[in-house]
Image 1 (tube, rainbow, N blue to C red):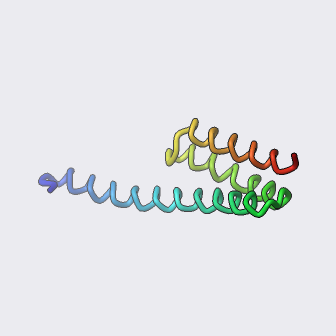
Image 2 (image 1 turned 45 degrees about the vertical axis):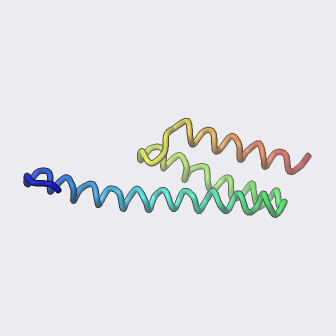
Image 3 (image 1 turned 90 degrees about the vertical axis):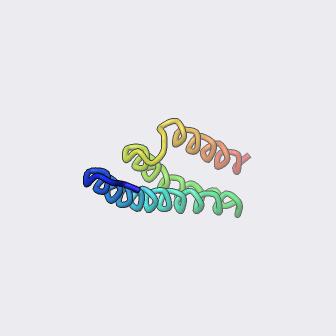
Length: 88
């Protein structure tokens, strides 16, 4: 347990930051799930629209430090490839 006042303050700060990051991560995952569901349904136009909405959300998560840049790039690349495969 934290003893010093500065350590106690850091615990409070970390708790707040964790809550914010959890919210951002959840929001990002919601957008990704919408894309996944559209792909599973085989609806290319809906998947494309959901993908367009998910892209800025993933980039926002990167800029806020929630996910790594390469992780977001990998997720977007794989989703894009799956959407592209729907038409084939």
